[in-house]
Amino acid sequence: MKFIERDIAPHLRRLAASFPALVLTGPRQSGKTTLARRLFADLPYATLESPDVRAAAADDPRTFLGRYPRGALLDEVQRAPELLSYLQELIDTAHRGVRYVLTGSGNFALLQSVSQSLAGRAGVARLLPLTHAEAARTGHAAPLDVTLWRGCYPGLIARGADPRDFYASYTATYIERDVRQIVNVQQLGTFQRFVQLAAARIGQLVNLASLAADCGITHPTAASWLNVLEASHVVFRVQPYFRNFGKRLVKTPKLYFVDTGLAAWLLGIHDQSLMAVHPLRGALFENFVVGEIVKHRYNHGNLRPIHFWRDSNGREVDLVLDDGARLLGIEIKSGATFAADWTRDLAAWRAAVGPGATHRPIVIWGGADSGPRFGVYALAWDRIERLPSALD
Image (cartoon, rainbow, N blue to C red):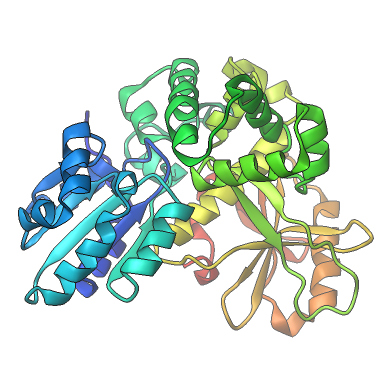
């Protein structure tokens, strides 16, 4: 399988040159191990997925780390989080030049362990599935509906796998392994239904009461399971932007999936021809655009959150990016014919913020061309990497 060049590589090299430890997190199958082994081929490699390696690390962590006095690439380190305390000790007593690269599929638990044990000693980066631009460079760019249906996991694209087979296996593996590592889910069938119901709510405000009722579980269980999905890099939440506004604004987050291919599979879109007529195509397109922007920011070392804006009258701007000086409002529309009324909520938002505090708004749409329209800039869906510097 041909190696896929990733946009995050320069950022990872900078972190590795600046910190004695580099922590690379992200969902399973996003390419963490492949990329880390390629970039840091000089380091010895050990994976904590192997039971014997994990047992050695747990039974005698000092001896285990003693095998790698100058550094190592330790894969799936969330399987042995107690190792990080001993790694801190080794880093603090080692000579200059020691370098450890740690990868892991966990999110909350792993990052909590890093903050406790390796604070100030580790640079942290997140690798998500391929951007559209990365996929295009491999020669595997696809039309919009195929892109939404197929998703962007590198293994799927590089191998030319059937998305139906890939996501069936991915879901089964995730439920059987990752969920049980994070929380004791007794009813796996109910949990799988919960994941499907979450997919049906992409781009919507999170309503845990409704989600719990539809799934037949309690509100606390729904909250816990949604945290599990987020901890495993399956979903993420976008918080509303409500600072410095006098009017009443929505303060509930919106829900998105890390990859639209997985969401489409969970929604039962098992044939690419169904995407064009599916009632959630617009939501999947919005999810795709939001995901592309998150990937771009992470690939350039920007871990700052993105936001959306919605007022009490239902007017909404899909994304608000803050570059520290001014705000950038982005509307997302899946249509291929540009409509003047797409800019209405952007105008209301800009008036509320103040034109001097904003960049020129952008509409990312399902059309094929880009340029100024109706006081905004229209940006084609396959040119998202050309957004201004507020992304970086």
